[in-house]
Every structure is written in structure tokens, then in C-alpha cells.
Image 1: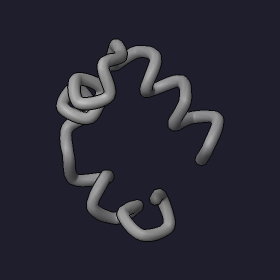
Image 2: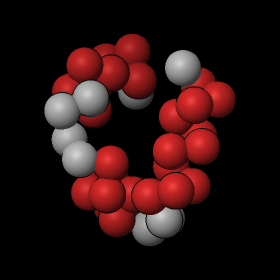
Image 3: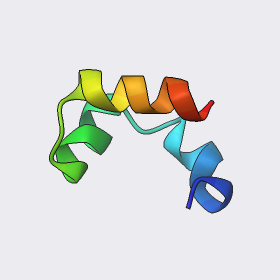
Length: 36
């Protein structure tokens, strides 16, 4: 998914992505740091 939507995900606010996934923005931020 990241390969296909990586560019798009950079433009969506982190809080919106976290809300969609049902996690806190801080958790998503830590996950993104590990991936990138």
C-alpha cells in the first residue's frame, strides 16, 4: 500500500489517517518513523 499511495499519504493529515485506522496519532507517528 505504501508503494502505491506513499505520495498521497504525505498530504493527508496524520490525525485523519490515525482516526481511520482507529489508533492514536502518536502511535501512527512512531510506526511511520520505523518504516521511513
